[in-house]
Image (cartoon, rainbow, N blue to C red; front, side, top):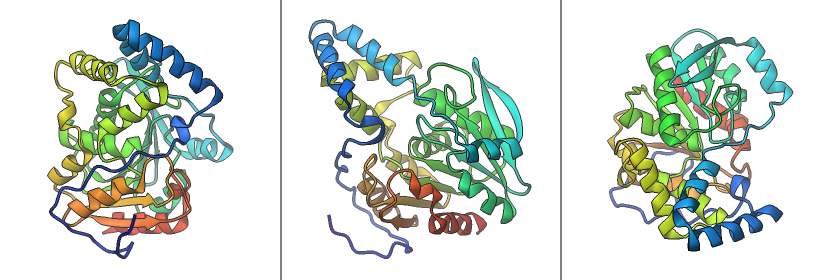
Amino acid sequence: MSYQFSPESNLSGVREPAPAPQAQRAGRFAATRGSSAVRHIYGALCRFVPGLAAHMAYAQLARPPRPALNERHIALRKRARRWRLPVGRNQLAVYEWGKGPTILMVHGWGSHATHMGRMIDPLVDAGFRVVAFDAPAHGKSSGGSTDLVQFANAVSTVGKHVGPLHCVIGHSFGAAMAMYAARDWGVEPGRMVLISSFNHCNWFLQMFAEHVGLTAPVLDRMRQMLSRLYGGRLKWSHMSVLEMARQAGFPMLFVHDEDDQEIPFDHSLAMVTALKDAQFKATSGLGHHRVVRHPEVIKRVVAFASH
């Protein structure tokens, strides 16, 4: 891959970029000793009972892991003003630090509210109120399962409760869901930071399907099942994060690491190239998670939020 631009500059373009290549298997989609057995099981189910395979796959995908919190995360939560916010049948754990214009943080799939915790103090010191929450079935929030509709609805519920929103900062799956919430769920950010985002929600499902060995017809059944579950409100043809960004009327900063092994760098590069005024912070050697902790990234995010 070759490209020419300054990581700190704005990029513009009008053509539709080609689809980004698939990520290497890493993170939650990494091959393990057990994944080959799972692929064998789904191979048989897809062939003989495709309907059951689709239901089992959705049930598996909808149960995100809950990683243990480290000491830094626990300390951040203890310092926060904390409360519970109802959304549907769930109770969200919400955390707040500082005073001033509100910045909402949205974590990724299988993560938690304080995953981007190293940004909190610099943002508070810059005069912001920072709000973060554990999504349904994540962290200390209730629920055993969730999906992208419930996730985006949670973003909307928290955003409306704590708004107006000066800025939204999302990482990975949470970046895409923040954009989805802005387009379809009434979230109105003044600006948005998308860190390590994919450029289409179908990509997330396709990577999961490849990981567990679903056939294309069974993956399509799973998509249709989700669409029916939400009465047609979820339309997969309208789930391009790039198109959501094109329709947005607020400034955006994209951040992505060239060595991200979970979501390819090309996803953000394609989106920034297709947008007129989006800003881009490219990094190298940080991967998918360390990018949210790097001092230069934090400095750029604080500067972007401060304008």
